[in-house]
Every structure is written in C-alpha cells, then in structure tokens.
Amino acid sequence: MTDFRKLSDSVSASPQITLADIAEAKAAGVGLIINNRPDGEDPSAPQGDEIESAAKAAGIDYIAIPIGHSGFSEVQVDQMIAALDAASDNVLAYCRSGTRSTLLWALAQAKSGTAPDDIAAKAVAAGYDVSPVRPMLDMLAAR
Image (cartoon, rainbow, N blue to C red; front, side, top):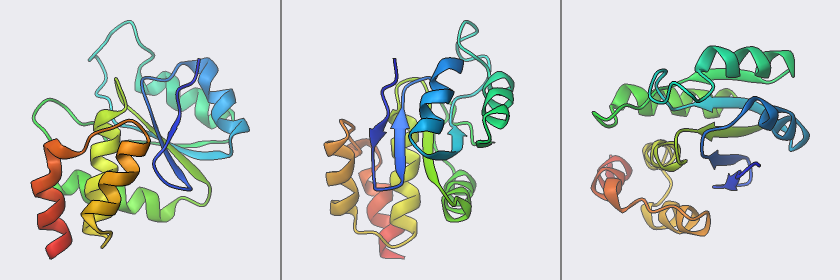
C-alpha cells in the first residue's frame, strides 16, 4: 500500500516503496524516483538496483542520493536541488520512513530560497517534522 505524502505540488515523500508501488507512482504522474535509503540498510527491502530496474521499465527516471546515519552533507543537498530542478514530472523521494527524504527536500528548498517557516508548514502538513534540521534550514536560507 502506498503512502505518498505531498510536500509540494510536484514532490512527495514516502516510506520504503515496493516494486508494486512503482505502477502506482507512474499512475500518479511520477517521472522521477529519488532513493534516499542506503542499500543494505534493510536487506529484506527492495534494494536500489531492483527499484531502479522497475522504475526504468515503467518509464520513470531514478536517482540515488543515499542518506546514512552520519547525516546530511552539502553535496547531498546540491544533488537534491539538481535532481528536483531537472525533473519534468512529479517526484517521489523515499527512505525507510520518508523522514530523511523530507529533511533533504527541506534543506534543498531552504538553499534554493524558500522561507524555513513555509518549508516547515508543508512538512507538517505531510506528517513530517523538520525541527531536527531547523538550524541548518535557517543557515541555508540566510545565505
């Protein structure tokens, strides 16, 4: 069962997706899947190469920007910005719970000039809390 949560008009976050979720993503207009989960984190979950193959077979682009337990880097934020900027259709980002995907989206939005309060409100509306990265949001938005 899908749990795609809208962060914006064109970006959703989700807990770990299954191969069956890819057809639902396609039907929802998703043109890019962003995997924020490192391979091997849960060996019983579909790994990146399986999701990538199924996505490409469905005509959906795929990119991996894994976020491990060490946290977020500016390189990952820049990769997320580039992926979102290049996307021509809706985007679905996923990880174990959707939280890392949401936090990376939030950081990318802040670095791109969106007000941190607006980012936080959108995340809360989707059921996610950006307070763990709020200082980083404020710093990136102030640049």
